[in-house]
Structure formats: structure tokens, C-alpha cells
Image 1 (cartoon, rainbow, N blue to C red):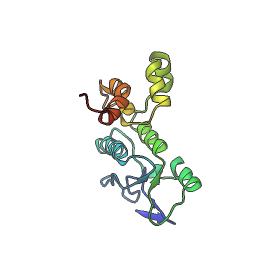
Image 2 (cartoon, rainbow, N blue to C red):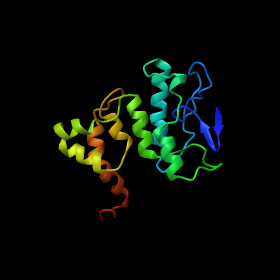
Image 3 (cartoon, rainbow, N blue to C red):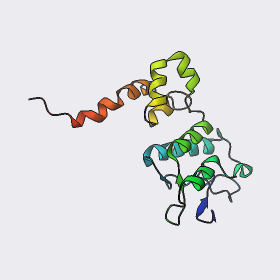
Image 4 (cartoon, helix red, strand yellow):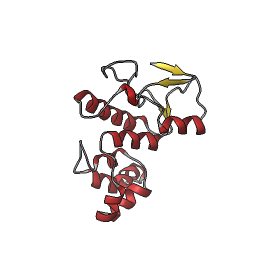
Length: 159
């Protein structure tokens, strides 16, 4: 693990690039503008695929990512937040690497109501379970009912 200024140099904020083989992963050690649990889940899915040999990891790929450029330009990178990430960019970047990023064009052409929820709705872990490895059949229903589940505890009791 190396530091460049206040940035900690981990490939995808998970793997130390100084190791010859990816045998150590640091999951959940990031600071974000979103929830940590979906990001830690996505990191764990990425790590699992790398350890199984289904996703590539090469020391040659350990370069500055788009997320690092965005963070350095729009966020204050300090000693307290060395692994600052943008939630949406980081989730999409990891999802692309493990082939679970939803295809918006495919959703637009095949399931427009779901496309609307994914494109204009909140970014949740459910949308990364629509296709690819780890696909969940209940992901579509979970996306459509997520606001119902969120507001249910806030409703007054029936008398």
C-alpha cells in the first residue's frame, strides 16, 4: 500500500498493487457520500471474482482511475479521508468489472417501467442484482417496492 499525498494507493480501493498476486483484499475501508454497506457488498463480490480467477487483476492495471480524478477535482482529499470515493461512480466501476452493471439500453427497450426506476430512482444494491453473476429473481420487485418498505414504518397505526 502506498500513499500519494493523502491518497492511499489501492487498486479499486481494495487490492494493494505491490503484491505480485491478489492474496490480500481490504473491503469496506472507504469513505463515501453514500451508504457503505452496498459498496462493501460490491467490493466483496469483486474480491470473490478476483480470487476465483473470474475477474482480471494485473499490476499493469493499477493506474489512476476515473474515480480518483473525480475525487481530486471535486472533493477535499485530506489525511482523514484518504479513500474518498463517489458512490455512483464507484459502484458502477466495480459493477462493470464483475459484469453486473445493468444495461440501460436493454432496460429501455425491454422493460421501460424498470428503466424509469433505475435511471431516475435512487442507486441501490438491487439494480446490481438484475443481471450477471449473482442475479436475483426478486430484484425487479424489490426495486418497485423499495419506497413502500421505506415509508411503512412512518405510517400511523391502524386503529
